[in-house]
Image (cartoon, rainbow, N blue to C red; front, side, top):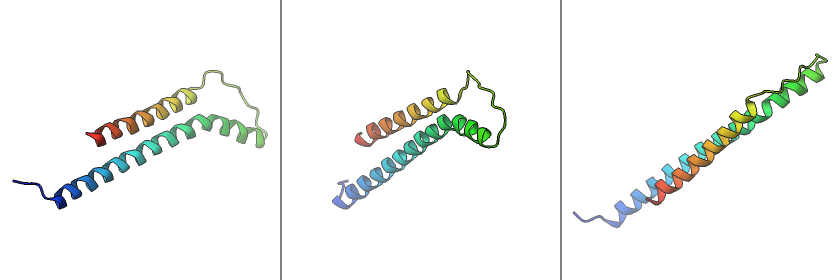
Length: 86
């Protein structure tokens, strides 16, 4: 059974749509990582504006979680590219 040019085109376009969906997902994960990193700073700023006494927490996990999310997003985009090229 021979593959027609229309079938190859449809397959290629489907692969591109899937690749772009994975890239959008990766960008979303990385964006969420940036939000998590900045969240503790935002909470501190709001508490200062409201006049509450702030307790400086030295061992926050938001930075680590945010960096991990950005790394997962970058890995997702790399794996999407590899899968697309296959």
